[in-house]
Length: 88
Image (cartoon, rainbow, N blue to C red; front, side, top):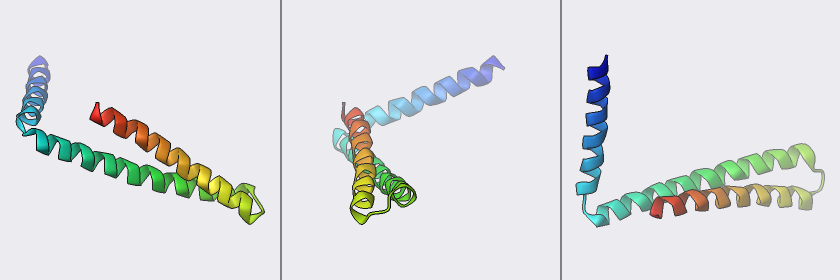
Protein backbone atom coordinates (compact mmCIF):
# COMPACT_ATOMS: atom_id res chain seq x y z
CA UNK A 1 0.00 0.00 0.00
CA UNK A 2 2.73 2.46 0.90
CA UNK A 3 4.73 1.57 -2.22
CA UNK A 4 1.93 2.86 -4.46
CA UNK A 5 1.84 6.09 -2.43
CA UNK A 6 5.60 6.44 -2.82
CA UNK A 7 5.32 5.80 -6.55
CA UNK A 8 2.63 8.49 -6.91
CA UNK A 9 4.87 10.90 -5.00
CA UNK A 10 7.78 10.13 -7.33
CA UNK A 11 5.56 10.55 -10.40
CA UNK A 12 4.32 13.94 -9.22
CA UNK A 13 7.88 14.99 -8.41
CA UNK A 14 9.16 13.90 -11.81
CA UNK A 15 6.34 15.72 -13.61
CA UNK A 16 7.15 18.85 -11.59
CA UNK A 17 10.80 18.55 -12.61
CA UNK A 18 9.80 18.15 -16.26
CA UNK A 19 7.85 21.42 -16.10
CA UNK A 20 10.85 23.23 -14.66
CA UNK A 21 13.11 22.03 -17.47
CA UNK A 22 11.07 23.81 -20.14
CA UNK A 23 12.43 27.10 -21.44
CA UNK A 24 10.98 30.19 -19.84
CA UNK A 25 9.30 31.21 -23.12
CA UNK A 26 7.26 28.01 -23.11
CA UNK A 27 6.34 28.45 -19.46
CA UNK A 28 5.14 31.98 -20.17
CA UNK A 29 3.18 30.74 -23.18
CA UNK A 30 1.47 28.10 -21.06
CA UNK A 31 0.59 30.72 -18.44
CA UNK A 32 -0.94 33.00 -21.08
CA UNK A 33 -2.88 30.12 -22.57
CA UNK A 34 -4.28 29.19 -19.15
CA UNK A 35 -5.11 32.84 -18.38
CA UNK A 36 -6.99 33.28 -21.67
CA UNK A 37 -8.85 30.03 -21.13
CA UNK A 38 -9.90 31.03 -17.61
CA UNK A 39 -10.92 34.49 -18.77
CA UNK A 40 -13.10 33.26 -21.62
CA UNK A 41 -14.81 30.67 -19.45
CA UNK A 42 -15.49 33.03 -16.55
CA UNK A 43 -16.80 35.85 -18.77
CA UNK A 44 -19.13 33.49 -20.62
CA UNK A 45 -20.37 31.91 -17.39
CA UNK A 46 -20.85 35.35 -15.85
CA UNK A 47 -22.83 36.57 -18.87
CA UNK A 48 -25.01 33.47 -18.87
CA UNK A 49 -25.65 33.71 -15.14
CA UNK A 50 -26.28 37.44 -15.26
CA UNK A 51 -28.63 37.17 -18.23
CA UNK A 52 -30.54 34.33 -16.60
CA UNK A 53 -30.97 36.31 -13.40
CA UNK A 54 -31.94 39.40 -15.40
CA UNK A 55 -34.73 37.58 -17.18
CA UNK A 56 -35.97 36.05 -13.95
CA UNK A 57 -35.84 39.16 -11.77
CA UNK A 58 -36.19 42.26 -13.98
CA UNK A 59 -38.90 43.60 -16.28
CA UNK A 60 -37.28 46.58 -17.96
CA UNK A 61 -34.63 46.35 -20.64
CA UNK A 62 -32.32 48.78 -18.85
CA UNK A 63 -32.45 46.78 -15.64
CA UNK A 64 -31.86 43.55 -17.54
CA UNK A 65 -28.85 45.06 -19.30
CA UNK A 66 -27.46 46.29 -15.98
CA UNK A 67 -27.82 42.88 -14.31
CA UNK A 68 -26.27 41.15 -17.34
CA UNK A 69 -23.35 43.61 -17.29
CA UNK A 70 -22.90 42.99 -13.57
CA UNK A 71 -22.66 39.23 -14.27
CA UNK A 72 -20.06 39.84 -16.96
CA UNK A 73 -18.14 42.09 -14.56
CA UNK A 74 -18.13 39.41 -11.89
CA UNK A 75 -16.75 36.97 -14.48
CA UNK A 76 -14.02 39.39 -15.55
CA UNK A 77 -13.08 40.13 -11.95
CA UNK A 78 -12.75 36.52 -10.93
CA UNK A 79 -10.82 35.73 -14.12
CA UNK A 80 -8.42 38.59 -13.44
CA UNK A 81 -7.83 37.36 -9.91
CA UNK A 82 -7.00 33.84 -11.07
CA UNK A 83 -4.83 35.06 -13.96
CA UNK A 84 -2.86 37.29 -11.58
CA UNK A 85 -2.17 34.25 -9.41
CA UNK A 86 -0.85 32.36 -12.44
CA UNK A 87 1.75 35.01 -13.23
CA UNK A 88 3.08 35.36 -9.68
